[in-house]
Structures are given as structure tokens and as C-alpha cells.
Length: 173
Image (cartoon, rainbow, N blue to C red; front, side, top):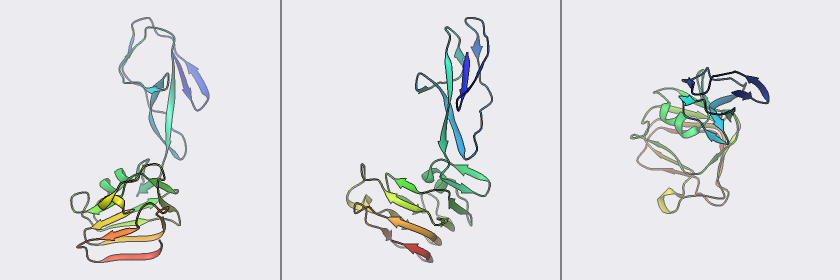
């Protein structure tokens, strides 16, 4: 079995039929480990050795962080944010669906600090009707700061509905 981590290949010998339960996930600065791939598809451990095979580490870019925790998906970071926390962007982020600040997704006092980066609407897949806003704010105490919101002529900017204490600090729409 060959293990390919960002072009560095190491090999391990296993007997035919050996079950590999799992191995330690590799790391790469600025990226998150997603999975081990076999033939371009994520492998599900445990795997049984039945032939010579190369497992390739698949990494994804981190797009946001909360404290010391990094996220490769902004929507997951938003759902994970606790009351009073700040989500910091680490790069420009393409959105394929609206970003929702709502009581049923987080409903907390949350800050999205863009660090000067941009949130922009995908030009290949975007919602219609009520889903056309880049950001929906349906809960209180949300702050957007140091961020560029680019609707790409597709989305409709920010929708604020029945929400109080919404702060825009150095936001370009």
C-alpha cells in the first residue's frame, strides 16, 4: 500500500486480506484533511488489502476560523459558532446558496469578520425567489465587518427580516 501525501509517497507492506482500520490523518499548513482517496474517490475505513493500491491524501482549503478551530466550509463554521464568537474569513469565499443568520441555525450574537476578503455569489448555481439574497439575517445581534459582499449581478445583497442590533462595520455591497 502506497500513501501519497502531497506528492511524498511512503509504502507499507500488508498481507493479502489484511484489514486496515485507520491511520493518522496527515496535515498540511493552511489546509484541512478531507479523506484518503483511492482512484479519485474517498475511501471508507476499514479497508481490506486485496491488491497493490495508492491512497492519496485529499486536502481542502480552510476558508474560515473561530478561535483556533479551522473550517473548510463557511456554512459549517456559521452553524458551529457559539454566542459571542467571531467567524474570521481566511480567503474570498464563493457562495452557492445564501448565508443565513437565523434563530434556527445559530440565533446567537455572532460576528462575521471578513478580514478584507469577499463573499461572492456563484455564477453557476444560485437560488431563486426568497433565496436570492447573498445573506439573510433573521435574528438579533449580528455584526458584519471588514467584508466585501459581491452579488455578481445574480444575488440581491443582504435581507434583514425581524432582526435588531445588526451592525455593518466597513462593509461594501
